[in-house]
Structures are given as C-alpha cells and as structure tokens.
Amino acid sequence: MTKKVLKVILLFIIFAALLAGCAMGPRAESAPGLNAGEGAVYVSYMQHVYKVDTKIGSELWRYPTAGSVQVVLYAPPLLNENSIFVGDLANKFHQLDAAGGSELWSFTQAKGWFQAKAATNGNVIIAPSSDRHVYALNMDGTLKWKFSGEFGFVAEPLIIGDSVIVAGLDHKLIALNIENGDLLWETELKGSLIAPPAYDAASGSLFVGSLGKELLSIDSKTGKRNWSFGDNGEITAVYATPILVEDGLIFTDESGKVFALDQATGAVRWTLDAGGETMAGLLRVDDTFVIALEKGELRAYKISDRTPLWTRTLDGKLYTTPVLEADKIIVAVTKGKVLLQAYDLAGNPVWSFTPAK
Image 1 (cartoon, rainbow, N blue to C red):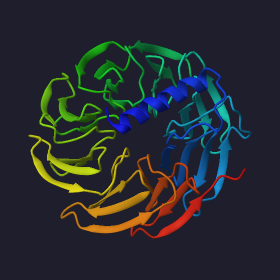
Image 2 (image 1 turned 90 degrees about the horizontal axis):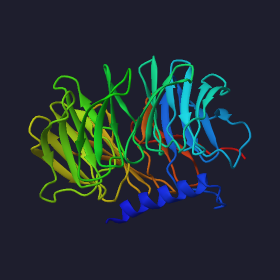
Image 3 (image 1 turned 45 degrees about the horizontal axis):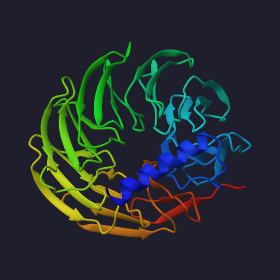
C-alpha cells in the first residue's frame, strides 16, 4: 500500500472522527474544494465557503458568516445558474444564493458527510455521501431517490443524458437511471475510485483511473471494458480525472509521471516525469497543461511537444486540481501562507487570497 493510499485512508478516519464529535484541533489537512465561474472563485475550506472576485482576489462573501466547529466544508462547490450547491462534513447538503451567500435550503437526511462535488442537469441534483448512498434531490431540496452502495462515495458524479455515472470506494463504477436511481450497469476495477471519469461524446467512452494502478476505457452505455492500461505495472495509483485531447487523453499517476494515450487503443503516445508526487488532476489551457505537485510546485508544459513553459513554487502543499477563470489559473493551497493564488497564463502571479479572521 502506497504512502498516498495511507494518507487518503487517514483523512477518511479524520473525517469520521470529526463527525463523531471528537475534538481534534484545527482540523484537517484536507485539500480545499475549488470551483470557478461567472467571474468568481468558490472555495470550501474548514468552516466556510468563500466567494472571491476573480479580478482582484477580494472576498465577496463567506458562508456561514460566523465559523462553527459544527460545520466543516471541503467539497468543491457546484455553480448552477444563480445558486451554489455544496455539502459539508456534518451530513448536510446546502443550496446557497450565489449573489449573496445566504442559505436557501438544507438537506439533512444523510447519515454521512459530503466530500464530493455534486452534479446537476438543472432538474435533479446528484449528491454522493460517505454513508454509502447517492442522493438525488429535486431542485427544492426534497429527496427524489437514493441509491445504496457497499461503501461510501467521494467522487463527483457524471451526468450523461438519462444516466448518471458514479465512482465508489468499493472499486465499482456504476451507471444509474437519473429519474429513479435504478442500476443500469456496474464495472469493478482493481481499486477505489475517488475521481469521476472523463467522457468522450463522439465515441461514447469513459476514461477512468483507480487507486489500483490502472486506467480504463469503458463503454458508457454498457459498462464493458474497451481496454485497460497498467496491467504490467506501468503506473501507480491514479487520483484524478484524465484530460481529453485530439484522439487522445493525458493523465498523471501519484508519482508525477504524465502519460498520453491513444483514446481508441490505449497505446502510449508519450510520457513525461513532472518531478514530484501529485494527487491533483491536470488543467488544460489550449495547447498547455498545468500540473500541481504535492510539494508546492506548479508546472506548465506545452502539450504538442512537452516543452516546459514555466514553474512556480508556493509555500504549502498542492492537492487540489487548479481551475481556469477569466484567463487566470487559480490554485488552492493546503497548509500554506495563502489559501488561493492566481496566475496569468504566462505564470505571472496576479493576486493571492487569505481569509480575514
């Protein structure tokens, strides 16, 4: 078992202890939950969700307005029209007003925490929980259906038409009917899945990695495997969603090795060693990909020829996949001097954000 797997398990234990009411000091060394859209950055960290202005990095609001040890938030917020949807580690799932941060409703029927980013098609909200359930909520916060699995769910769901794809800690990738929660298919992998698959609409293929040191192509309609990569020990655990490029895909394993594969066959096109371990996913910006290394380095490479473009070093750990908003690359920092750091596309620092106490 790798150090990273042990770290993930330890974090789950910490989360469980938090929910059991244990006093554990300032809580968690978990990764901030990050998302961006409509000219703002949304970050969940410790006792708050923050909305930050993308232009200058100023705080626009925080939820709740007063911190509470009973509320711990790490799930990436979901932005949908004028609302934010986010779950917490006190077993509650919230809808917030995106403009002002006020709570519109709260779903309280779960028995476990919400760490994953939710998904919605505008009619149904899909919220995975650690209590072994995937909850489907109506837009008013009432329960539509729930699906029971063997273990908890910590990966963001993927909605494709009338189905929702959910990755579980029980090593299974499953497809559910989005209207009633009926199981459509399931595929078992070698390890737990903590990130959603990438989806190519043209081929109908899903591309997903697991902690079992593998990356697979799976038919989204049937759950059947198209191909697998890693059977001969080529990779270590995969923590994040691949990015799709022209007829190919790019992903990184925990060692920081980057692989480009052919979408149709899984054949290796090229590899690159980024120089450090990572749990974060890759961010694509045109012909550039950005990788966040755990040791606090952010590196950019040209996709077409893997030319290194720039490297930036931050004070702290990087576990969260960077996001792009308004031509700025936004990075969330764990145990650092700042919570957020923004760069322009050339890697020049633009602003940083540290929550006021």
